[in-house]
Length: 180
Image (cartoon, rainbow, N blue to C red; front, top):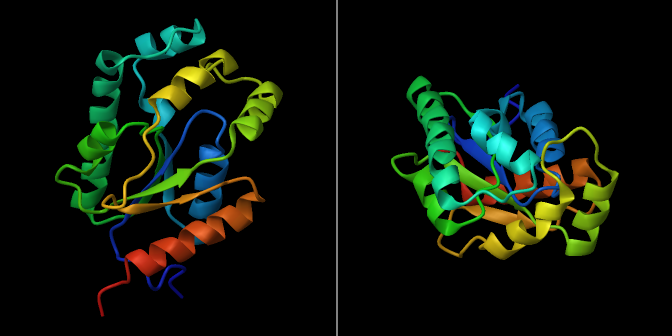
């Protein structure tokens, strides 16, 4: 049985939000539920971006554009292959999301938006990630929430991961029913 009978055949879910929002955990749960491939968007950053963030230096747009183009290229490859995927990408600004959607009709954004207090606590407890908690304020300052005309949904992401995934799947099914 198809695990996602009411979701269009080619859908690219971009799980977005600031560092510590739970993007990876939620994307992995969605991938488990749907049986889709998952790609960690951070793995597509050039080494210079990773080094900059690891040094506590926020990325600027000039740093982000090549990375976002790489993310968009992966989405395009999957669309051409007719396959769905889950991908994490902070996608903080509307212009970044516009680039990801350009010529990619499969894109649907899952914005995970916990409170700043929850984000701070999560980042303080996290280890082994190159993105230091000191960059949270710059990410929050950059973040432009999804607009009503953008395909996607926003959830608080403060509940259990499986509950958040269920919320997102319900929103996706309501927004993008499969063609009959």
